[in-house]
Length: 514
Image (tube, rainbow, N blue to C red; front, side, top):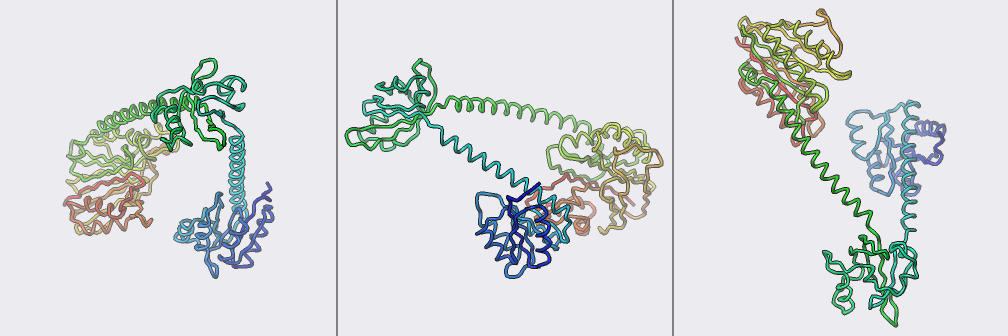
């Protein structure tokens, strides 16, 4: 593919880099402009109007960041992609360059294959831009060539001239319009801004200064008596012997039909929205009924779920078996909204059935995984942390797949143990019993276990920094055991500021009593 019609400006203070880029661009058959610093690059953009700019960041006189900002400030009616080509590959520099106005970022040393692919994509985008501009110009030319109906009439409403388009609008020959009373063609119907005949008469007597040049909707009548909506705009001809006026007439039947269609579509969309809202509320109610909130509350655990949408893909469950063992699960299904919620909901009943049967953790995980593998489509899975605690003998077991590590918290809020999440999420592939690895847990002093979804760890604040395990540990150190979950929520709120989390956030805090 040849791109000779596109000119590429290369801005780099190093001669070897310019030579390499020139060789690459020559091979791709682009036209090339060269600049040795940011100031020269900005000047060439003003005079030569390149199609693409390749910008180094570290240059004398003016660096790439300022040059990008000044090039973007030039404005213009076309998009000029700016690609940073730099060895500065730190996240801060990438973000800073993109915020300055760049469209893409390439790291040095350059791979020719990657560079060629990027440039070809940009060229295709520019070709699309050019074709759209050509189409717009053609449409503008056609629009300019379309002449509305023009009627010339005098102060007593008599038509003294008409063009071919006017004859087409009113369904007759031009000669048939001569001498007609224009009021027979443009019915004197009452409209929101008054009758146009009355407004015209007021203008003749100097009482309406806004009639000339104003656009009005009236009812047109063709010579076969059919009526149609139209717009007219009247202007006065500067002739000396008598007062003549021109009425530009446009048939707006199609526009009115479209307006009616849009109104009908809006009504249907509103009806669809109302029905969807009602169905969503029903789905939410059904999902809530599946989760036994009473069992969760009676289990004595602290929990929190903060969805990004109406439906949460995170589910927290806890219940005690007949002999008092505490079963708990934090599940995080892929995606967001109703689809994710339905993936997690599929294992709720299986969880409660396992609790009733006081099923060992290994067998429980195996059952949940294989059920999800059969149920979920490819690409869908459920990350989960499952815990079984026998608080009477101060021991238990954990299984962690795809979720953040589980933290064991001491009485002073310090993290005393970190259980690694080293298993695959549920629902990816069928397992055998030996595929399920369970971690043992024993304790002697009072402690707590914190389970959370990755929405908590990955929550980004305004500065783009993640909350992370560091944020979790800071919040825990400042809180007493009874309100550590509240402390985590407060710390997360301060971290996010006015932003919303990009993912569902769930937490489960389990007591390990002495």
